[in-house]
Each structure stands twice: as C-alpha cells, then as structure tokens.
Image 1 (cartoon, rainbow, N blue to C red):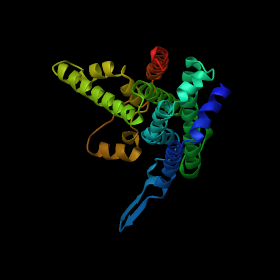
Image 2 (image 1 turned 120 degrees about the horizontal axis):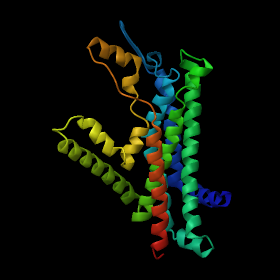
Image 3 (image 1 turned 90 degrees about the horizontal axis):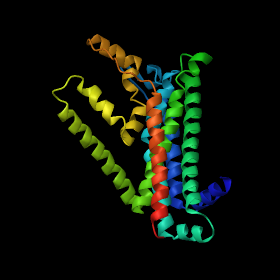
Image 4 (image 1 turned 60 degrees about the horizontal axis):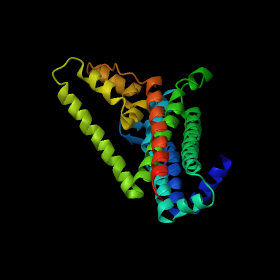
Length: 281
C-alpha cells in the first residue's frame, strides 16, 4: 500500500496543475472561517453570521460538511487529470512494463482517492472544531460530539464521488471530457427525476415514490448523504413559524444511504479495473 501511494504522490508532486488545484481547494476550505467575520451594521439592522448560530455545536458539523462538499469539484479535477496524465505521458504503460500489475495500478489510484478524502475530512473536522470552540454557545462534550456522523458521511461522499471521477477518467482518458461526462450524468439524473415526477403526477405520495427510486442513483445518493442545513437553522425556523410554515424534513444521515454510496464506490472501482484489464494499452 505505501509503495503504491509513494508512486502516486511522486507523480502528483511533479504535476503543477494538481498542486495548484489542491492548494486552492484547501485554501477555500480554510476560508469558511472568514464567514465568521461577515458583519453588517446599518443603523438598527445588525447582521453577524457568527451570531446566527451557524457555528454552534452540533449544527456546525452539518453546515461545514455541506459547504465543504460543494468544493469537492476542485479535487475531482485532480483525480481526472491524474488519470489523463497517465495516458498523455505514457506513465501507465511504463508502470506496467516496470512490473506494476493492472490491479496494483487501480489500487494505487483508489488509495490516493481515499487519502485525499481522508485528508479533506480531517481538515474539515479540525476547522469546524476550532470554529465551534471559538463561537459556539454550547461547549459541553456531549453536545460537541453529537452529529459527528456528518463527518463520516462527508468522507464516504468524497470517496464515492472521486471513485466515480476515477472511473470516468479511465473511460474517456481526457480530464475535460471526464468532467463533461460527470456533468452529463448529473443532467441525466435530473431529467430522469423530472420524468418520474411526470409519471407519478396523478399518484398519491408522489415525492416519496420519486425519492424512493432516485435514492439508488449514484449522484443523488451522494447528495442525500448530507442534506441542506439552512432550513435547520434556528433563525430560518423562527421566520417560517411566523408565516405559519413548519419543517418536517429529516436531516439525519441514513445508514441505507451510506450503504448505497459504498456499493457504488465498489462498482466504480471494479469497473475501472475491468475496463483497464480489457483495454489494450
């Protein structure tokens, strides 16, 4: 494992684009701390995000993992360019000539995916913990350790998403086309969801039926791992209550969704290996 990781990180170390994208990604993750400094005082109107409770434990685990997950596309570019470079610079063929098996090659890429996802997860955990200890109104240990399943969900989401990107990178061999394929897949899932709504429009529990089918698609399942946190915020709920609206949405991380994304991850890695094994290099 360490030998394979050493090979991959040696390649990444000498890839300027990958280094720049990685630095930008972790820089943007760090910039979430700047949200705390956003403050507007216009006469009687005072707006300070940190005082609205977004950094309160345990809400911060939900909020920060959701926001950080939006930035995952930067590391996706690292993953797909990593595969594209293997074909462009003939390093894949050279690795195989030097004795690396195709199975080891795929494992080396998957290990890299896991390490990048793990590094992102640890980074988000540390940033969230620091912000929470600095701004949260609740610092009891039992509250701080509540909702930590969002950290696990974030890790699972990144591994699944990057594994999908790895498969597309092997499939189309070009980073731009791989990202384009990801976008096309996303559009395809959205169109299919619209079709389901149209098909069930005259049925009872339309939303439940549509969601029951969509939850098994890869990108939808990854989205479901960490649901939007904004309607969970106390200030938003207060406004909703004043206008007679109530939220019954569940924000919990479902084990079934973790299982679905994990299965898709295994499928993407297996397909990557099967494709590489079949392809004449």
